[in-house]
Image (tube, rainbow, N blue to C red; front, side, top):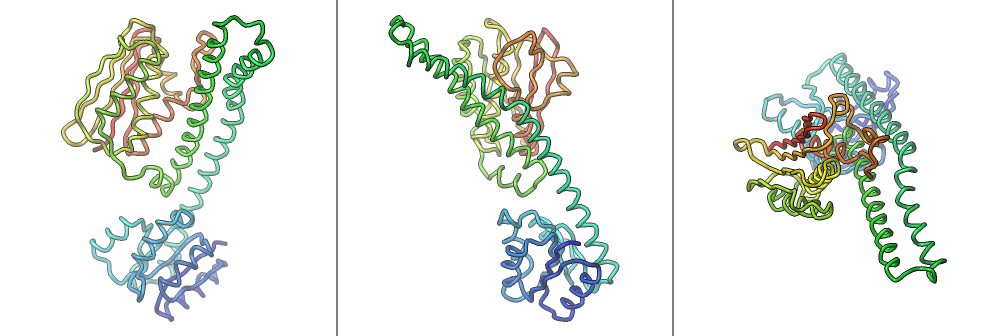
Length: 363
């Protein structure tokens, strides 16, 4: 049984639909116009909304627009009832986020078929989201304690020495212990922010409303953002001389915060998994006016095809041989951010030779 809201100004059609759906064991509610229907949708939170287009006070397009702006109702499946079936009307509704159209006059089989299809699709999306949530809970539960405790242990140990053994310290010991506390705190802060961002990206991957809200409407001056972040990363790694920039002037439709995060994670990996004295190339270009491409190439450890295919959260390759800090979220976050903006992240690598990571974003 599903909860269904019918918004229709013609009494006979509304009554007919309510009786038909009630006979199918659905829980139903009706509204005679859009102005009444919107607050009912927010209160009732139905599994499906069937709505006429031409209505007084607030038409169907207005209803859909208001509900799609509200996070609590943005993902509710929406079927338009319409006597108008020309392409412009259909396109307008789809652009607003309508899931289906049923043209008047319709048969019982047509409306029930549309309802069944939309409810089934909604059920599939909900189940998929539940699977994602369970995977997320499992991943966090298995990896979060270790990743958070590692820097926290350093902070607590250094602080304990300062508090309880300060009389035995040499003058140079205090700055050294303070530096350990500061660097571990920075690591802990970045780790916490990455976990939060990863969680939001994973949920947005199966929820169009959350994806739209997360994506925003910003744009980035790519040269300025990439240059600042890459230089900061090289300096932090103590490898300013190894950084080679080749950036174009372009404005890309991605929030500067997310472009910055993408560059930060990829540049950090490039320096982390290559040795001092080897170059790290950060370049960008625009293919015509259609695709913005960011490339980061290092000449370090490299990755096998199996490792590339297995890129995912909380994964560190060859942990028994290498002790670099990090929880393996960087590549996953960059990959999810590219996908959020309709792009993709690709990795090409030869073990022991080089790794090239490319991010393509549609302009």
